[in-house]
Length: 427
Image (cartoon, rainbow, N blue to C red; front, top):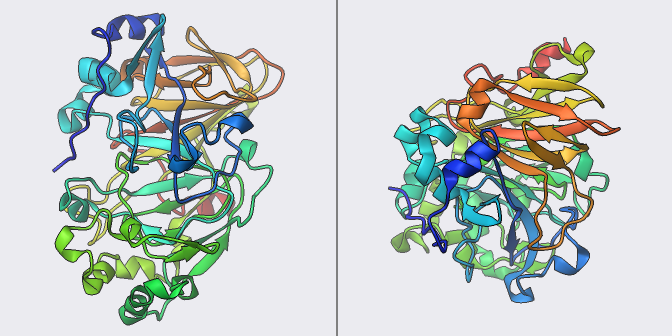
């Protein structure tokens, strides 16, 4: 079961075909900003300093920017279109969700359209001053009980936005080997006694710009304070297992917001949600840590295309449908000044410009220095399946490297590396 998504109505029928053709298969997207009431913005999103609370202090600070998203943000008191990316064309605005509904096979490919009837993933920057509470995202079967979808995800820490690590550039993952379910249950019992101590059962890993992590559903993680590029399944389900973070209380409702009503106080059920074997894996780093892998030897030609997010998702507690599959992946393309190259991909992608200035087909792209809330930028596009498979031409028209990140959806990258493949390249 998939949660219904309400499409905001435009004043007229959007001319999606005209937008696709004007961009030679590319759609210009507007920035999509998302606040979180329980976190503190890290202020590295290039948003103007006056605009981090543009939605009101009661909504919390803006600490996320979502890319090519057709997924609603799971926030209380949110706007009807919060989390949805908008296409901008010839003075007209309509959601990417509407565009895919109108031209699905052309934009995301016939196979993906037939399977999902939507763009089923998204990516984002999340940017916080300090750590996020230890939490997990439900698997497909668990999320279906509340009309949602499960959410595996991956991290990449782009160097361009991580000159400073903020308060805690470390992430806790999983649980230490030897921790028992009774230990975790005891933490839940102590929820209202202050810090419930769940981080005492976990291990922190120092984060390094230019690397990443592979995070399946049902695995506990307390992300640190590096700005993170995060491709993930198109869902916003989560369960917070930590009662306090940096001295701030985490409400129980954030723990059980995606739990069936009858289990919201059932501590045994809440412990059993975790993929126990994955959480207490003594070789967790070996199975989840990522380093970039070059896709071909092209450095002598003035460009590099590197896998920065990759790996398969699956296992006994990862849901009945997805199994051991390529659910999403991402690549970082770098062009030196003056270089022009045509890139062919097997599938559609959402693209964000990280550094430099240039063109993609007919569209100008540039990484901005500062963005006002509500302003249009030229750093984000959606590359349609049609354009990707025919080939998209990139050119660096500036004096510094042109760097972009693009992420792909399910079954789009059958030849992408498996987790741990970078170790073979090091040898």
